[in-house]
Length: 100
Image (cartoon, rainbow, N blue to C red):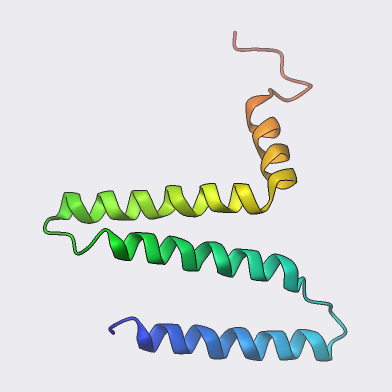
């Protein structure tokens, strides 16, 4: 219930930004936005099912689990982008000479 205010503010901000973008001629990637929203909703539901944290370490565990779940869902929903990201982070730059 405490998150209702910020959630409403974010929704109004997103709607106004979308309206302004559309009026400026920008096309919104609704498919991508939908996948991101779906990933966030699934992550929120799974973290909610974990229950309340009784300690600071329990809270940290829920935050870390939420981040991991969200990242995995985004990788599943955007496989080409995830593959490109992973290849770029695992491969050294072409001009790298190595560590002296």
